[in-house]
Image 1 (cartoon, rainbow, N blue to C red):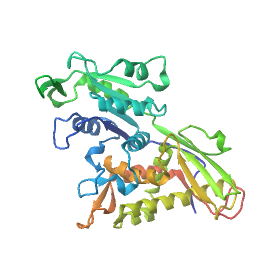
Image 2: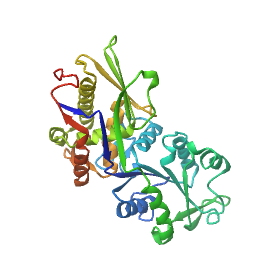
Image 3: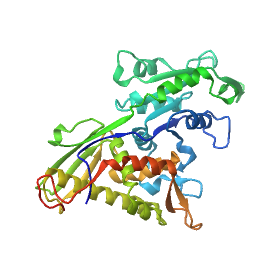
Image 4: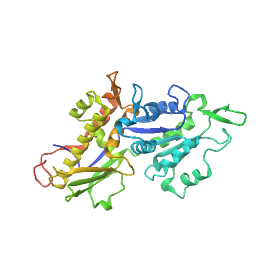
Length: 365
């Protein structure tokens, strides 16, 4: 019987950076996020940068773009929130009202604020500071450390674009379309500051006392309603799901062609089953007829949405590829695993143990 260990400390196998910004161009080599993505790949240890607009859209799935509808997600706010919770770092290229709103939405979450870096042009270069008074007081205030985010200024090349007689704006680019040494040092210092390890712990609680800890997986058994209530962070879920991808039978099933939603349902069923077996093993209770209900800390997303987006998250980080074989039905895919993911998920296999008895000597379920 495969179960998760009650406690386990693992080494984080990847450093996944969520790149936010506006007006992204997939084909423009001068686009700052394209340059940052390549920089992170080449210069950050175990670095993988992801850009949502490269991979996904709100329209139906095509060969080049996956639809959020396939994984039951409808709103950009919940998508960006979940991406940031899964990511190790969030880098916002801030120059517009859109990215100011993005910063406000994410940094207001005290779990997310410490992993956010805002990259913004020097005020003299664009004749105005992009960090306004409200943003500065809200997110760069030394007296409010719980929502303080990291700030990096850079000195861009600029082009002045005139849209009408009274309307003009600056377009900014990295000098010579490269990350210079000073900017590189600032970015690298921040991006490689993420903790190197993560410690899991299953903890039985009275649910009103559930922890906000990223590393605590809290559970409560409710005999009257025959439910097991589980509360865990997106980070804990991410590493547990990555560990599942080290199991041969699961990999073989995901490799088969099927609708994306079927892949999500399969992975969700496997995860629920192993979590229930784990809690049964830890608590010494038979829970065969009990239903598992999971909530994701600091998120409004359901477990199904979080698991569906986990696959999209790995796709955007280029750790898996949802390959299309059926030309007539773009939503039918098989999951191809990169060598990086295979080695990373193998490291996480230590999250599991195989057991036939509970801690109290009863037969396992």
